[in-house]
Amino acid sequence: MFSGTKGPGEAESLNGSNLRVLIVHARWNTPLITPLVEGARKKLLERGVKELNIVTQSVPGSWELPIAVQRLYAASQVQASSAPSGDLLGGLGRSSTPIPGSTSGTSSKGPFDAIIAIGVLIKGDTAHFEHIAESVSRGLMRLQLDFGVPVIFGLLTVLNEDQARVRAGLTADGHNHGEDWGEAAVEMGAKRKL
Ligand SMILES: O=c1[nH]c(NC[C@H](O)[C@H](O)[C@H](O)CO)c([N+](=O)[O-])c(=O)[nH]1
Image 1 (cartoon, protein in one colour):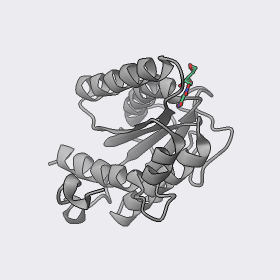
Image 2 (image 1 turned 180 degrees about the vertical axis):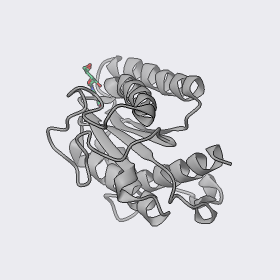
Image 3 (image 1 turned 135 degrees about the vertical axis):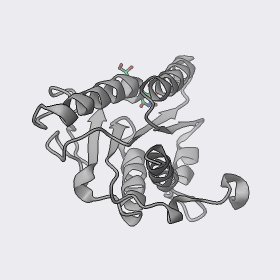
Image 4 (image 1 turned 30 degrees about the vertical axis):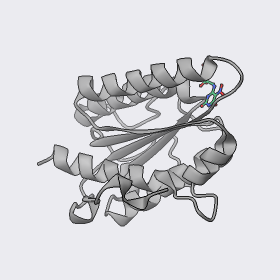
């Protein structure tokens, strides 16, 4: 893949030390989700985001990403003003297979400056893929515009598992797109505070 397509990054010049970032990931295709989440976390930490300010929650599948983003962001707004941290999703976001660094709701307080929604949709023999991909994409776009908070689009929509493995950085010629999403979250979160 031509490496220049993404254009120059800006996250190097942006400091993530005062950002609070939410990662919401699906549990479908966990062997692919795990490296993507870890790639995003790695870049967040590299750009100065504090471990305590990275909240990770999981949902069953990509279809549930928009509602989880909406509820977690709204809860963080309320939390910013009063309520103790607690479990932000009332149990909805508990991860049955915690990924390193996953939080179960206890974390720092305050509104999120950026959100990364991560899922892997692999096309099957039916139109299911298209319905989920379209609805989740539109839902995440609406949320970021309605809430005014950057929602980084981490939904891989691939035709087969090999394509996903390349984009999760699991092959010699692959690149972990999770890292790009982490960088984008720092850039967009920092710019939101300018
Ligand atoms: O995240 C995914 N969810 C998938 N389905 C589950 C869906 O996201 C919901 O969790 C489920 O329909 C319950 O609402 C997938 N497929 O069906 O292939 C998939 O590839 N990836």
